Length: 65
Image 1 (tube, rainbow, N blue to C red):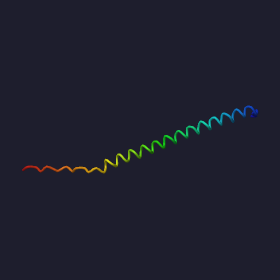
Image 2 (cartoon, rainbow, N blue to C red; image 1 turned 30 degrees about the vertical axis):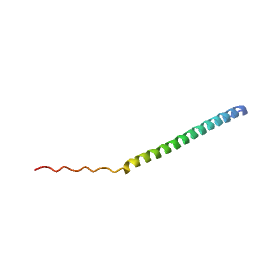
Image 3 (cartoon, one colour; image 1 turned 120 degrees about the vertical axis):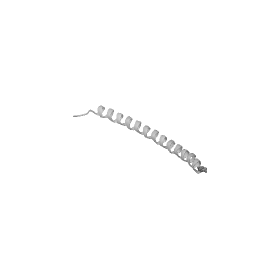
Image 4 (cartoon, rainbow, N blue to C red; image 1 turned 90 degrees about the vertical axis):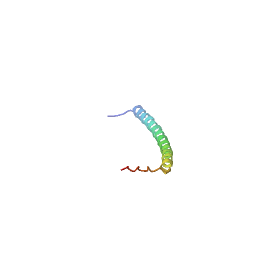
């Protein structure tokens, strides 16, 4: 199969557009990943604060006999 120069130029431009779109998607995914990491750290901090609070132990009641 033989391609004309104009057909090859069209293919190259389409591929370039696709690469640019993929680059934009990758950038969006990186930004989303950074936000997830940030919120994960905040959540871990909040949870660790709650875990450090002292918990009262229940005092078992004695059975009357």
